[in-house]
Amino acid sequence: MRIFLSYRRSDSQDATARLADRLTALPRIKSVFLDVESIAAGEAFPTRLRSALTEADICLVLIGNGWLGQSDTGDITRIKTDGDFVRMEVAEALRLGKRVIPVLLNEAAMPDRGQLPDDLHPLLERNALFLRHISFNQDVEILSDAILHNEAGGRLGKRRRLTPAGVAARVAGGLAMAIIMLLVIGLISFWVSGGQSLETLLGGRAGLGLLVVAALGLCQAMSFGLIGFPFRRS
Image (cartoon, rainbow, N blue to C red; front, top):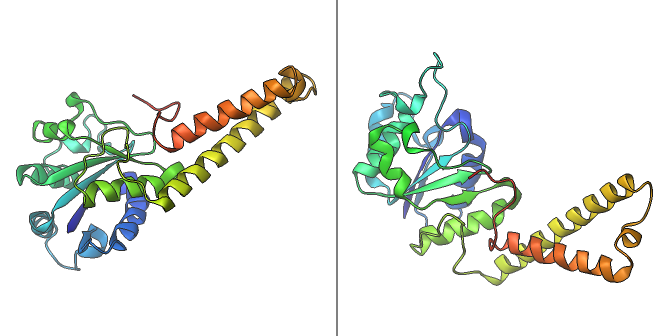
C-alpha cells in the first residue's frame, strides 16, 4: 500500500514527519510519500506530486489550525489561490478518486465550505480522524487500522479493533489523566479553601472516593474515545 501525505509545511511539518516515521514502520505499507524526502533535487515539483498521487492508494490530508494558509497580502487564504500546492494535491487526489482521509491535528476543526475553493468541497464529505499530541500513539493506531482494514473510523476516531497492547496503552493513558486531574482539583481546592483537605471539603472518605471513581471513569472514557476531549472546537 502506498500513502501520500498532504500537508502545509508552515502548519504541520513536525507532526507530519512524526506520522511518516510511524507509518513507514508498518509492514504492509510499501511507501510513504513526503515531499521533502521523496522529491530529488532538480526534479519538477508539480510533476512529481502528480505522479506520486497517481501511484498512491490513500491520501492523508493533515489539517492544523494554519492549514488554510495566510497569503502574503492577507486578503485571501493560500488554499484559494491557483498556485497553492496543498490545494493542487488535495484536488488531484479527489479528481483521481483516491481514498482521501482528512486528519485533524490537535484542536483543529474541518474548514467550512466557504473557506474552500469549489474543487476541494468534496473533502468536506469525507470522514475525518484525529491526530493529537496528548494521545499520539493511540491515534496513530486508529489511523493505521483505518488504512489497513479499510475502516473509515468516523469523526470521533472510534476504534473497531483494539490489540491487547492498544488496550493497555489506553488504560494507562486514562489513569495518567485521572491522576493529573485529581492533583489539579486538590491543589485548587486547597488554595481556595485556605488549606483544607479535599477529603474534608467532600465530607469524608466516601465523598473523596466518589470523586476518584468519577475522575477515573471520565478519563478512561476519554482515552477510549467514548467521549470527546473537553474544550474542543466544533
